[in-house]
Length: 453
Image (cartoon, rainbow, N blue to C red; front, side, top):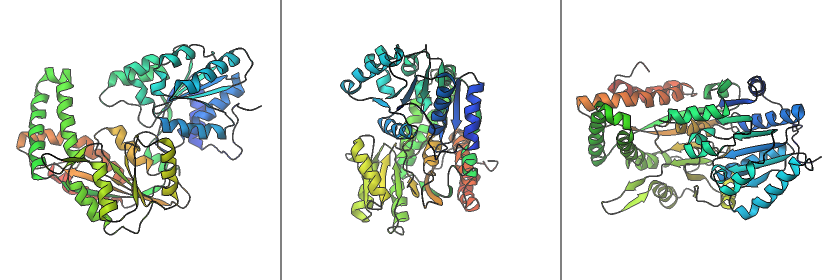
């Protein structure tokens, strides 16, 4: 019989994956798996679906992903388990009729099993909602990168009559959104053991070991002035309890300051200095922010374009850009060229934040700045995925040095920097060159009295 879940012959679940399966069943068919990027959450979810089919005759597996490329990745993994997934995304003409027919057949016992993989945006559509109300009781819904589903409209669109629920995320906690986090865990279920950190995943061999090189970058004079002004205003906002409650004013100031850090002009100089001695290397990812780099008062260029120009036109390094706008077929071509060395590097934006699987990456230069813990974990963890011949990964991480500030602003900066620097320090501590990496961060710790980290 085709299209029903079965274990691949060559699959051996890792001990923590077996524990996760047992834990989910012990929690009455609900729960959220908080496991490091690259540790095999997809395989664990498909193992749960297979066990459900063997135990209760599961009829439908519904997987909801935030992005189109994840639909393709899930489809590949599902096929290894003998499934024939229906991909319900993009044009409704492509999937509506097959979905309606197959749901009717499953409910009428004319079809044994149905796998549906869709996107968050399709989940919201009336055409999709009109069909998922017919999902049978023996349905498992899997929320991939589930933290996204805590957003109000998405959380409200999740089917309430489906009792079997599994959330997957390395970081299920939503940034600055406790209510959304509570709603998410309320739907899928609380985080269940085992929680698997980045360090755990490296220790059990699910991720490769790595070298870590922080690149400290100074702001330009004009960037420093703008940064100092915003930091002072942030300090005033923090003293105004009403504005903290509203959160919007403070958030806007923090976002403006984050843009200055993200698009710091000297990151390009740091990259130029780094790559002059690395022009013979391959399998390198250059991860950019979505901001612009100022060339003059009247002309700005996106950071990703500036980086591609610097590497390709100036240094002669064979690169291409890889973004959410790149068509899926073209992305696959780029991935193949990257793997076989035709392209030495990819200049990317946002692709490391949510599930993109390019395990051939051996070296990465991170130019994007984020104070969001989820993005920090995702971006760095995704580079550590195992790949044939890949014994170690190397990561260059640009860290912007705050400018000189007055005493009040310095205290505000210290409080913000404590949280952010803690993540860099933890990542440095897990590196093969931990001592060297920590030494690079020491000046920053000394300057702000954060030697206790």
